[in-house]
Length: 237
Image 1 (cartoon, rainbow, N blue to C red):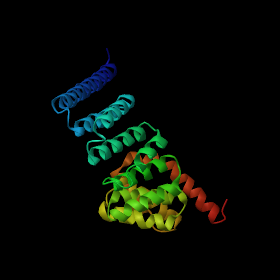
Image 2 (cartoon, rainbow, N blue to C red):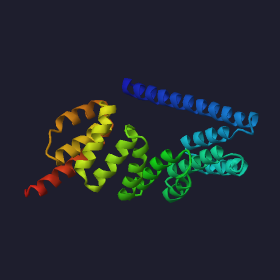
Image 3 (cartoon, rainbow, N blue to C red):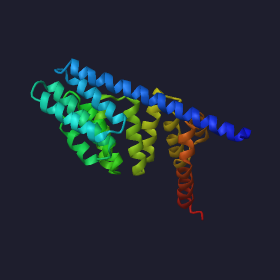
Image 4 (cartoon, helix red, strand yellow):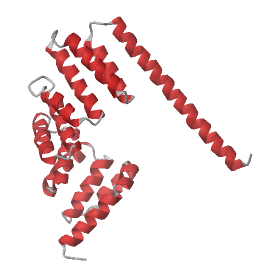
């Protein structure tokens, strides 16, 4: 076996070993979470934790069944339990790409203690459906409760960008960057807005390229599209 073949084999073995270690860790976590339910059958949080972990494993059907079972057990016991589990079920549907079902669950929380989190997830769900106007409505509502939250401001800025409201998008991207100046995604998106607004954009792209090179590379098509848009706007061919 030549040196190159040996190197390839070693890389494959390293990848397989890492995969086995990750699987072992996941199995151990899963076992512990199931054990927690057995040991604390009257604690709704154990069901929520297991359901959330199943979502991480992409086991959406099992996660849905578990959350539905937990709602049957705890929904009438306390408002907090019901809200938490409804939110958890909404997250299952969101992760599975069933956005209409997710929206239905999150709407049930609009008057509860978790309403701000529900508004955030409603905004994200509508963004995923490319219904950016509704995404802005719910992101603005959430932002009213947490004005400096960079996650909400990024969500709001991204929705406004998708609608072509560049000046307003810039305002909320700037709020994100005040809290997280090295955020790669926010810097890249702010750079795009700066291009459209004919502002200096290089500074944003330089930070984005260093902080999040994968997002920067993925965004090159968006950059090309924006450049075409600017050319058309300026009457160039």
